Every structure is written in C-alpha cells, then in structure tokens.
Image (cartoon, rainbow, N blue to C red; front, side, top):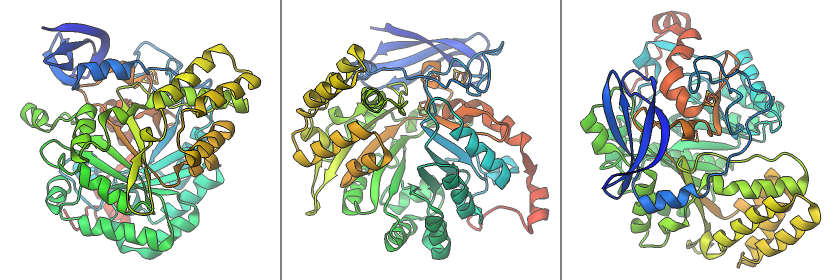
Length: 498
Ligand code: SF4
Ligand code: SF4
C-alpha cells in the first residue's frame, strides 16, 4: 500500500523546473514522486528503509542562516536565487573553492573536467583570495574550514601559495581534494603543500581492487593511492580522509575491507567518507537504477561486511550534533558552528582504534542517545552557565570510557579546534553523504545545506544546487575555450591518460 508521508518540492530531471513532490511509503522504502506538466511522472528511491527514515527525521534541527546574505529572495525563488539568500537555513560549515577544472584523469563517472566541457575554468590567485575572504566574512559564524576542489587541484603548480593565502586569512583547517597521482609522484610538491600549512588530503579511494579503478576512473590506481598515503606518512602529514564513491554492483562489496585498511593505517587515516553515486542528466534510466545506492544501503552493507561490529544503528544523522554546538555556544558565549544539514543528507559514527590493531565503535563507550538527549533538553531550558555545568555533569555520566570522557568534556567546555583534534586522536570518523541529483533532489535538503562553493562573482552556493543547476553558467562566464588556453599555456590540458 502506498502512503504519502511528506510533501516537498523538487525539480524536473528534464527541464529542471521546480515542481511539487511527495515522499511515499512503498515496498518498504521511501520514494520521491513528482510530475512535470511537460515531461511526465518521475519516481526515485529516497531512503531504503521506512522505519530508519522516521528515526533519522527525529533529528531535524535547523541552524541559523547567515545574517549578511549575498542575495535577496526575488522572483525566481529557491534554488535559483542562491547566493546565499536570506531564506537559507544553515551557515557555511565547509567552504569549497574550485581552483581548476583540468584533471590528469578522465573518470567515466565525471563529466565536469575540461576535456569534456570544452573550456578551462581556472580562477586567478587574486580571485581565489577574494573567494576565500567571502567565506571568512560570513556572520555571525565565519567559515573556519574549506577544501580546494576541481577538476584535480594538484594540476596547479601554485597550489601551495593558495594554501598559504588560506592560512593567512585565518582558516583553521584546509583540505585538498585529490586523486593522489601528483602526491604519489612529486615529493617536492607534497612537501611544499605541507610547509604552506595544508591540514588534510581528501583522497579519492574507491576500494582495494584495481578492477574498480578501471571501471570508475579509467585506469589502475591502487598502487598510486598506497604510494600517496606512504608519502604523507613519510613527511608527517597525518590527516588523510579516504573518499569512496559508492556504486552498486561495482564496489559495494569493498566497505569492510576499506575500514580494515583505514584501521591498519590509522596513524595517517582519520576518516572514511562514503559518497553514494549521484547521477548526471546523461545517464540512462537503466544505468541509474542499476547503480543507485542509498545511505541506508551503505550502513546496512557495512554492518554485514564487518560481521555486525559496526552496526547500522551506530550511525547518527549529521544534525544530531546541533545540541552539542548549542551547548558549546552557551558555555563559551560565542556563536558556534552548527552542522544543521537535513537528516537525509548524511550520517556518521566513530570507531576508536587501539595499538593492537583492534577497534571499538564509540557507541560501545558512550550512550549516545542519552548523551544527546540531555544536551538537547538542556538547551531548551536555559543558556546560563551554572545550569550548563549541571547538564554537562549529567551528560558525561553516559560516557563509560574515562579517557574519552575527559576529552569530550574538554571539547564541550572549550569548543575549540584543538579540543576537537584531541578528541579525534585514535578515532576514525566513518561518514556518508549522499549528494543529490535531479531525480532525488529535495528543496528541503538544499535549503539546509552547510557545504557551500565560494564563486568568483562573490556568491556562496550550496553544493547540490550548484552542481545540478548553476555550475555550467558560472564556469562559462569565468572560463576560456580549451584551444585558447592551450595556445597560452603551450598545449591542451588533456592528460596523458585520456
Ligand atoms: S538553496 Fe538556500 S541560498 Fe539557494 S535559493 Fe534556496 S534557500 Fe536560498
Ligand atoms: S551538499 Fe547536498 S547532500 Fe550535502 S548537505 Fe548540502 S544539500 Fe545536503
């Protein structure tokens, strides 16, 4: 039997117009269904388990937008007035700055590289400085952390200089998204990035079998990934995030092995971030249905592939952390960063590693439900310091491991990056974010997005609307045709691997 559980808005996958959408219970799953007057009805899986959907939605907890929005709500409405507009419900937690669309790979799953689109998008150093400054200008909570993205950011020789600019502007945490090729091959460049202040690599890592890389990236790459990690170890860059693009039938049997690999290399690897594939307009219905995998599928598979050790129920939706931020805000009396995404955008948990190579899920050391609900209740009552102290005492009673208790207590009291870093010692975060595509696009998710691109026209655009709706126009405005770039730079920016 079909039952409507929620009404929202989405876009037509053909014409990209905003249309009404319904979330439905059907066949044990939540589906999104919508009808475009011109292009007909579309139905897509939204969440693969009804009870789990209901549970994650209990954690919806909106943050605050920014008090200095870049655009106003105008006649076009959301998601076409992005900038951020005054209606956006979250501030920027993670900034993104694309530094190039050139790449040294041509992944079959990527349509954004220069060779495919026919132009080179590469903001100047001055433009990038302004884009970073715009992130820092957010009020009341400035953005503290960002990623250089692309294309492949390491195609730029001046990337170390750009990292240095980021640090000079006061960013506390700077990451580079990378396929790892240059990190594996160019030790001098890697050292220059570290010396400039780079904090972390967001390393594309789809599994431990080269057949996967051949399918998803067009060539064997496992050895390259391992060399990149070794090189980071050698120079003491101890913060690598493994980023897995998850595709059903291609690498969904790799999750247990990837966690094992992360634990074995936990001196360097601090997080595993899984991204169920999202599809562009060019994919066929058959291909899309074959490869579609959801956040719930991921946590369910991980439980099975770790023999029940990392249970699906150990994963909490990202906004479950908002009560922690509110507590810190009350304690420090400073505006605090809130990860107030929509609950269906992402989930995460931690495992704590031991010297003997074993690990323990944090949920076995902390009663997370009780811990969060005490902080949640405390927030609605008061923001007075004496009472937060009382809440803190109650909350930490649910932390059964004395070492962790001390670290979590310190983080709640100080709310600083250093305190967060101390908590992360011996911990691996396992997270999953399912970026949206035109089929599962939900405006309620988009309006709560915390990951924002900073653009050369001065706007900040949430990740999912940017990639689905705005990227082409923006890049066209600020790019040069491929041939023109080639004649100015002594050759076309197409890699040797194409
Ligand atoms: S996604 Fe956010 S910033 Fe963009 S138009 Fe909608 S509410 Fe405004
Ligand atoms: S990037 Fe997309 S999936 Fe992630 S928080 Fe923003 S809207 Fe949600």
